Length: 457
Ligand SMILES: [Zn+2]
Image (cartoon, rainbow, N blue to C red; front, side, top):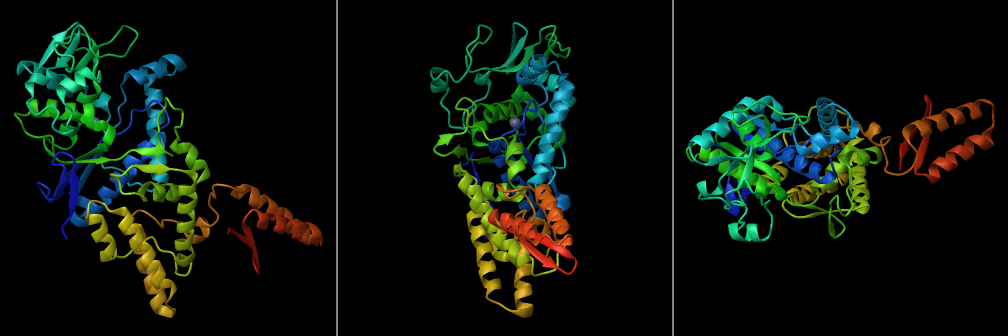
């Protein structure tokens, strides 16, 4: 089977053929850095981390160029700065660092480029000027607006009907707009707001413009794959497409469009207004990153994913079973080539449920074998898991790691020390009590020649 992805623009799976197999380009719309991100944001980052891994496998690590941006100028950031008194750069640097660290905990590879919007302001002004010259944009009360009449294909990606869009008030009506669906390329800044001098007055870029410019600067005019969450199809991606195509004599922004589905809390959509938002950094306090990664990839990326505590518990149990087997072979950072069954599953539009089934199958086979054959099968399991971004830990460390519930590593170590002291003073009643208390919390103590070791059940 060939590598194929569901292309939102074509509305079908298409064989993936990059324009230049020695330089495959992908772009993911990254976060606006003013606050902690939620697990829905992480789903997008992890799904497309997997895509990055698959592309690197097929085209070679040196031949895939991946950029994921930071939006570091935005009304929400300005508001956060006014509310907290912190400088904008301090807020955006802090949350960009946190975002990076969180994704590292989820075993995501770093993109080669992480462009920031504020590093591209001159190029943004240039692009707006080009659009004005071509009659695709106009000025109004210090704003510059893109005229959607200038782009015949407007709405093609999302399938949103223009009239319906206006009737449904999904666009902001404003006196300076010729058409309510026209969108902002540049907006004026008040004196106490950050701004840059431009031919239309001091102001700042609109969000959609930022991505178009960063894509061109970092990757080129037409890229291979543009990725993002399903909620970005309209208006964000529709607007990126319109700006870029008009500024580039019709050259398309991307050859393939991939979108991941929503993450739901039970049957509800996760949203700030319902108040059911789960923050990634909070989850990471209770669960190992690989457990969260497993949960995020457990459903096919285009399907909605129901996020529950039970999903996390199940993911932990499954990973524990794999790590139990991995304990039998010597740890290594190196992993062999992934088995064909796993590669083929992901080649088919990143079919993670099928790849997970493949992992279970290899585990079942390995557990029925003995001796060298068993070790080889376990090594195959490790290669398979590593391809998906799992099994990075030493099994010994894994079983000591965050359990979701139960005592922390520090609490356990302190109790073990107390138990060792009790044994020294021959207080065996206390020593046994500590062991039994820990056992009741799922912590197993194994006494050996070089002291006591522990692991989670
Ligand atoms: Zn974007």
